[in-house]
Structure formats: structure tokens, C-alpha cells
Length: 92
Image (cartoon, rainbow, N blue to C red):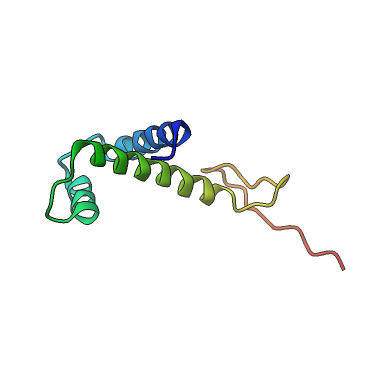
């Protein structure tokens, strides 16, 4: 783990994923996630915690990247609004 910021972002990311899966930790998503991350073996609790926080931080970064598709100073429509975003025309 790289530091306190990663831990914070990991907790925030895990909170979002947990909320999306309704905190069903033995559900289909988390079972699949555990199998793909660790295979058949079971890691130590410290390794498991570190991997979970890294995964949470990664999910947060990916979510922020998805929202950062606009250039600085240009804002698209809010999620769920009926407005469409038309990119600025290039200057000729």
C-alpha cells in the first residue's frame, strides 16, 4: 500500500462498490472478484486488506477518469439530464 491517500481512496471506492452490490459480500460479484484476484489460495489477512484497498482506489480512479472526458473549463451535462453535450467547434 502506498499511503494514507490510497487508503482513503480505497475506502471510498469500496464503499461505492459495496453500495452498488448492496453489501452482499458472499454474493455473485464478490465471489467472482475473490476468485479472479486470488485464485484457489487464500491470502493472509494483511495481504487481503491491502489488495482490497488497492482495488477500491483503482475503482475510484476509473470512475473519476470516466467523468473527466471534458477539457478543463468545459462541463458536460449532469448525469440524468436531458441536455446533450456538443463539443466546441475547432477554430479555423
